[in-house]
Amino acid sequence: MIKDLYDLSGKVALVTGGSRGIGRAICLAFAEAGADILLNYARSDKQADDVKRQIEAMGRKCVTVRADVSKFEQAQNLGKAVINHFGKVDILINNAGVNRDRTLRRMTPEQWNEVIQTNLSSLFNCTKAVIEPMIAQNSGVIVSVSSIIGEMGNVGQVNYASTKAGIIGFTKTMARELAGNNIRVNAIAPGFIETDMLGTVPEDIRKQIVAQIPLGRFGTPEEIALAVLFLCSPAASWITGITLRMNGGHYI
Image (cartoon, rainbow, N blue to C red):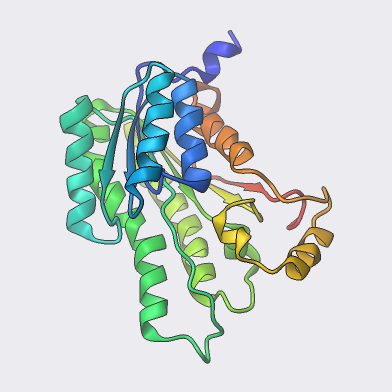
């Protein structure tokens, strides 16, 4: 009974930014739970193909589609691709994101707009791409990846923080709009996770951050993926409109 509550057999998930970091971990966790995957990525064919091979080794289907989800038309084509390949879409994971850190005084309009378009406009683009099929089947789950930075802010990340806070507002509103169609919409707000993005942070700064985390370490992509799996599973069937904080106690 408990095992069945986390079973995604027969489900189809579209995961943006699925070739590395948190997105990669989500794709692999979903495949292990029985889902077929449309993996969206923006840059590395090699990384995407590597994840695809791992998913197919589990006996699941995986289609990789290179697309820039900050572009409306490319996101629409992504939605068409998942229907063409699988005939339906049950889960959307809005995970794609970038950071272009700089204080507001030094930030260029290009750096502002790139982060806004990639991190926030992509939610509009991708949700629009799958919403009609989900409404037609009267079911679906959408989970978007926010951040601790969207809750507490951070020096040099006004663009990033704005998008991650916006994701929370988007999630609450869409949860209200789509509840009548049996579509659940939630967000997850990770703290500092061991990904490529964190890997660029100097060691002395990393130590300062860890010192502020009560559990005394960074999180892992796999831990975030398991929480996203929960939110997409039957075990979370009465949960919508929430933002799940996962930050080791960093923001209590």
